[in-house]
Length: 82
Image (cartoon, rainbow, N blue to C red; front, side, top):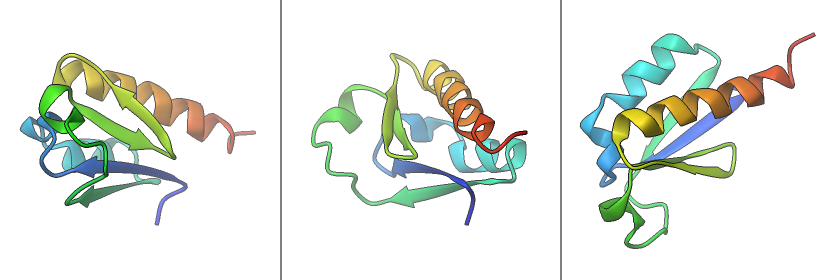
């Protein structure tokens, strides 16, 4: 398991991208968990989003959401850097 966990609802608009493959190849220390439901009812159909270490990250497009997820991952990883 990674030091950063990205949770994604498998019904989410962000799954238009191979979010799991993209993130885990760029950040080996990150675990992407695909879930059936994250209990943010309705949000899946409206906006692409993920939860990064407990913080919801969302945007208007899957690509924009991926960029914001990367920024949040970098912030989380900075905690472990010297």
